[in-house]
Length: 104
Image 1 (cartoon, rainbow, N blue to C red):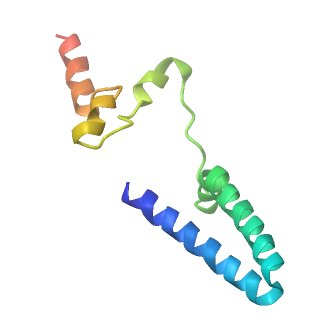
Image 2 (cartoon, one colour):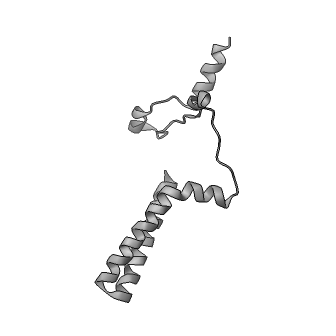
Image 3 (tube, helix red, strand yellow):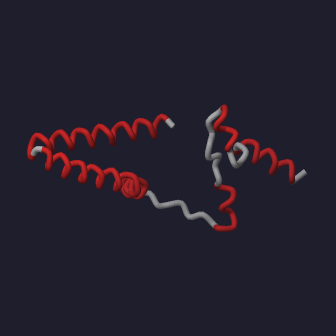
């Protein structure tokens, strides 16, 4: 969760810096152009960051067999407390424990 907040803050800072630079260079119209450019950058970063990271590390995407895809579900809301009420799957340790008990 902390990484999401850091990323959001960095994107906001980038947007503000671009808008200030646009206003200084071209006035109010430049600020609007810079805002549109920042929106494009943020859109690209949001939708393509995983592909960029895979390319930069020269990795290959994980190929998951459809028959085993249910094994790759991770607890979507790992936070404790009230948000844990909306968790749709048990923790991985609990899953492993259940699977081991099935073999006995």
